[in-house]
Length: 289
Image (cartoon, rainbow, N blue to C red; front, side, top):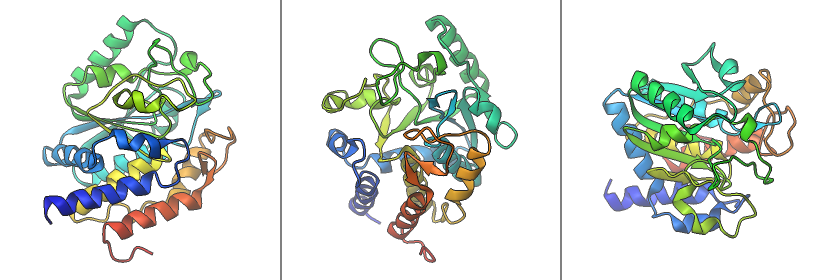
C-alpha cells in the first residue's frame, strides 16, 4: 500500500473516532496534522520490532474510585502490544493499581498533592528501572497551567490524582497521548483549539496526540491500525462487555453518570462494540460483523 493509501486509512479512522463530537474533539481535530493515528501506530510498531517495554498510563479519578473510560482502552493496548511481543506495563495510582495488579504488570504511582521534586523523583526512578521504548497516556488527567488537575466540570481533583505528567516530560523515548475532552495529558499540543471548550485545559504535551469521542475508542483505533500494519486482527477477541464487567466488579464508575454500570462516558457498552466492529471493517479483516 502506498503512503497516500496509508494516510487515507488513518484519516478514515481519525474521522470515525470523532464522528459524534461528544465533547468538541471534532472541532479540535483540525489543529492536528492528518495522519496522527498512523504516526502513533508507527511508534508502537517500532516498539514491537524492538520488543521493548511500553508504559501505558491510565486512570482518571471520579469520586473515590476510577472511571471506566481509560482502563478499557489501556487493556486493549496492553493485550495488543503483549500479543505482538512487546512488554506492556500499566502505570496508575490506587485504587486502580490495586484492582489490576493481579492480572497485569502494574507500576503504581503516588496519589495526592506531592511536591514537584517528589513527582520527578518518582518518575525518574520508574523510568530508570523500566527503561521504556514508548510511553502512552490514555485518559490521564493532565496538569493545567496552574499545576492542578481538573475534571470536565472544572472541579479540582488534585487531591485524588496521581501524576503521570512527569513520565511524559522526562521520557527517554517517544510519547503518545489519547484524550476526549481537553483536560487530559497531551492536550497541551492543541492549546488554542481548546479555548472554545468550557473546561480547564491541560497543558502537558506529547509527541503524538490522538483525539476521540471516548478515550477508550482512541485506544481501539490505534490497535486496529497496528493490527492492519502487522496483518493481524488484534481486536478479534476483544470483549467490550467483559472488560467493563471486570472493571465494574472492581469498583469502576462511569465518568459522566458516576454510577457503577457497564457504560463508557454514559454510552452503553454496545456502542463500544459497534465502534470496534467498524474499525475491523475499515481495516479489512474478514469475519468482522
